[in-house]
Image (cartoon, rainbow, N blue to C red; front, side):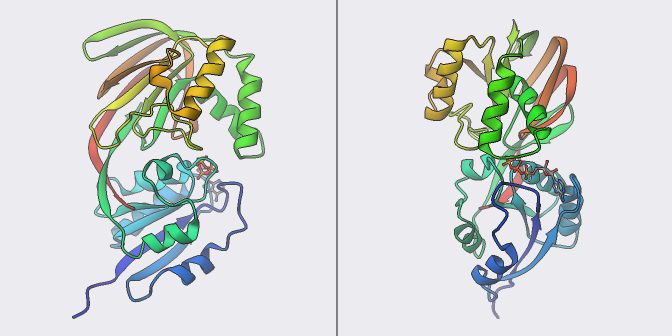
Length: 293
Ligand SMILES: Nc1ncnc2c1ncn2[C@@H]1O[C@H](COP(=O)(O)OP(=O)(O)OP(=O)(O)O)[C@@H](O)[C@H]1O
């Protein structure tokens, strides 16, 4: 008797990324082996829809549910799969593709699709901030503020992101925070406080290059202030992956962190701005999600 085919549901966010010309249905038909895979393709119709579609796909016994999009789509699909028996797959089609890059999913769609004919299954940790799950990174301060402005910018992509970040750099000021973790408390300024499950924000910008997505810990990256000289060093550190030895940021690891801010601070999950808050509870559930890569 031949082995059962792998049942895969693809969830495509037509709004993700900057290259929307790829014909995803044609690529799936061309590169998936019908002897190995049975599949279905669904399109999201609004922000948040991918979570509902993923939950339904898991309930109808798809073994793999693939987010076709960027980290925002991956976040929604991943949330919909938590607690189910379905694994998350990724076809990277976003602007940054942080989790896909961390997990070494090929960035070329044909290569990534071919891999799904016989994927490897592994488990990864899942982070949480104020009840919102994240798979790649979350953070407070400047990066969240830039995510908020980026969402309002009208266009997407790296060039828009850099333009928005440079403009906001002149305006943003650090906020005093109290950060409690591992039985210690830091009283510091927060320009950026990042919680990294994976090593990068996307686009190979390594905010926490030593982050291990299976170690049961979040890597904290704290930048208390960002005068121009340090901003240049942080930019180089993000690109080279040497922030921990640059002296421009401080690193810790922990599974539970509490932050109190002296004034409202924005936070993001997986690059999408959520809201402003003053109290933050950050945690991690070890190996809570299966991925198919
Ligand atoms: N049909 C839709 N219409 C409008 N927005 C959508 C739709 N489907 C999903 N979205 C939203 O689009 C946002 C952006 O998607 P996504 O993050 O996947 O792409 P990206 O921002 O280009 O990539 P990355 O996060 O890797 O930079 C997500 O926050 C998601 O909620």
